[in-house]
Length: 311
Image (cartoon, rainbow, N blue to C red; front, top):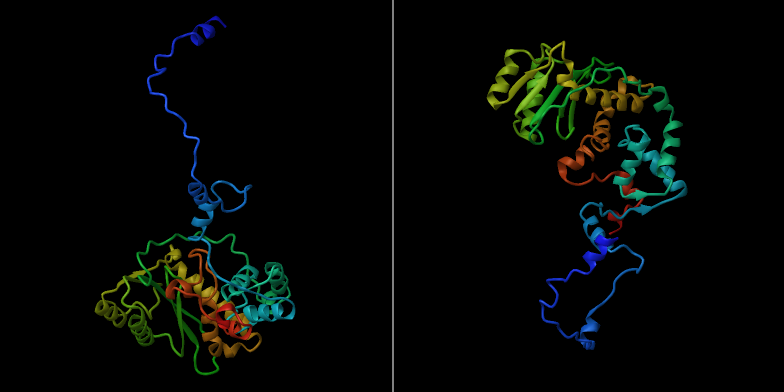
């Protein structure tokens, strides 16, 4: 340790460079009274900062806590009701959250409820594990790109056999109309109504059906300055978003109408309501909330006195 001893004996060249200052041991009581402590002594030093920043990320929603039979009635309404859509346990629970209601075992109860739903078990979702992967499409703004497609023909009760579906690729917002035919005339009329409500989009995507590939349809696209894109038989993922929406609407209708298949047109508006207020993982909220900037008020919120309905 000779080297260490020599280093310890070296003269410090910076010693006594600064003038020594006298320590002021007098501290006014007024200054002491200004020092306050907030919180718990055992809390982390950054607790106040974390709580401050959390206010920008935590959703400030006051939910009414329910229990017992009322909780079961809410599950029934959010799953089997007109705005339910017979979705899975997670989406059913999220719809209850959006309605401003809560109870501690909500996910467990939703799972048991869906498991015992006859319509869901009879019209169960088939595994899509082996399907071709879908590719994302770049969209700039909401309602910039729409996909359109026909569903049907279905059993006819009121003269309607087809459903014309349009879905916005960004917000997942769906428009649909029951129609007696699937010709170019009804397509153009539907699109004019769509453009009047949501504005002219940048592009429309469809398959190569004759109801889309015709002169009348092309004139409407030219008039409104819309780019028309066609999906190909060897790459059907181009119109994948509208196919997903078709599947979702059809699943809701199948579970809502039960054995009376011909009554599907009467349930279409309720199916659209259920679809638009269902949580979508790609956008992190419901299509309704993304489009309108607020959650959709459901009938159960008034019936079971959600917080906003009590004010």
